[in-house]
Image (cartoon, rainbow, N blue to C red):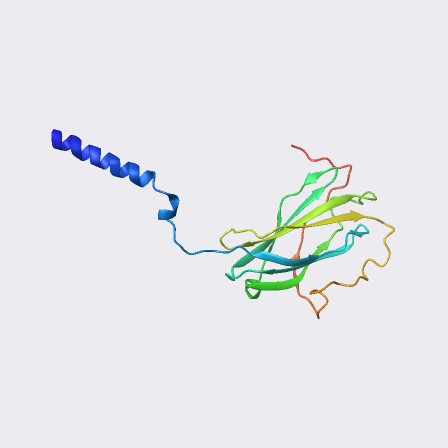
Amino acid sequence: MRNLNLIYLIAMLIGMMVLTAPAGWTQSTSVTRQPIITHAFAVEKGKYGYIWKIYVEAEDPDAEMFRIASVVDQVGYGRYPTDWVYLKPQYQKHFRGYLQWNTFSSKAGNLREWTYITLRISVLDKAGNESNEVVFPFSFESGVKDQYKYKLPAPFDQGDLPRLGYITIDLFGAQSRRKG
């Protein structure tokens, strides 16, 4: 009986040691680095229906970039669900290009003048590590002229840039109210 109690006590101590061991003991020692957005640019206003190009350059030392997250907040409406653009394999280590958002919406016949949105972009790798976030303010203004003619800043002014994908968020007009 005494030996049985001693065995239970030893088993309990070993179990407590395993359960309270630092998490680092069971994890691998490899270091993963998150992606980094190094440059970004987008115009800040345009007419409703504007084809908005959001220029982004990013890199990942581990060559594991997987997708780009786009999150939109609209004054008077709120936050929309995250929109994802999945990257082609050649863009897993480095990319420089643009996301295209055709701002015409099937859910809004028109947007009120001065409708204001904020677009947040970040890049995630295959392990779920998220890059820094870049924020782009934008307002819909009918009086904007030559919105398609602007000079791109470096490094986006060097040759043809690939379209990385489309942002597919449909905005709601001010008269639409979110339920919930």
